[in-house]
Amino acid sequence: MTGKILIVDDEINIRELIKFTLEKSGYKIIEAGDGQAAVTMAKTEKPELIVLDLMLPGMDGLEVCRIVKNSRETAAVPIIMLTAKSEEIDKVIGLELGADDYITKPFSPRELLARIKAVLRRSNKESAVGGELVLGKLRLNFSRYEAYLGAVKLELTPKEYEMLKLFATNTGKVFTREQLLEKVWGYEYFGDTRTVDVHVRHLRVKLGQENEVAEAIETVRGVGYRFKDLSEN
Image (tube, rainbow, N blue to C red; front, side, top):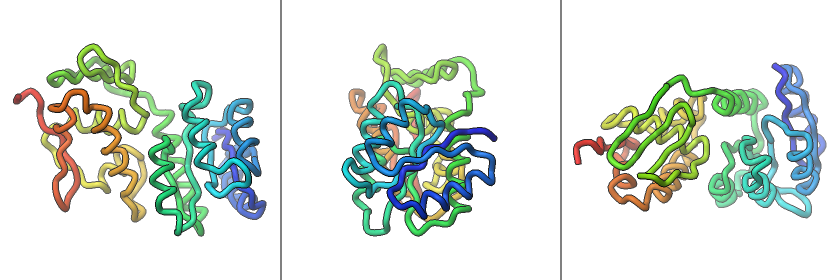
């Protein structure tokens, strides 16, 4: 395992803890102690993943996340945010800006390693399904990793695409939030399903130009979500 990971935290002891844990698993570690350095290193060092603390001097982690995800050079780089328990709103904002996952301080190094492996596995995995799937006005091209509403290409994040693909290839099946975490994010349930709801909300917005497609993602109260078969319309 030779993946390069950028650790961004102004606390040296936190960086050292993460570095020690990840280097034992074979990762190459680069470090930044502030937001501006993180943005620069993301572009010049081309890491495979960024572990990003939100509370940084000067440019905070949310701004770093926004810049990284809005830059063509770095948009595909996965980000795992480090947050404090009191930063509930920041977690949601970070996910809305495109972060792939978050973990709350204090954290278990073992859990962080599991999250990193899962995010990298999803990021690097190529679709094994060939061809296209057409459901009403929705079209998925599996080989190109693209989704369309009619002739309009949807600008989806990797997680949004994977979630839509899972729904579209399993119409009518109800998925719990825990199952979606496992199938889309690639790790077992750790206790917080907020990221699933955020991604579903974003997906509905992006599908909103065709109401019947957006409304096909149905909430099953007390359970999770399912995707209605559009061919029945």
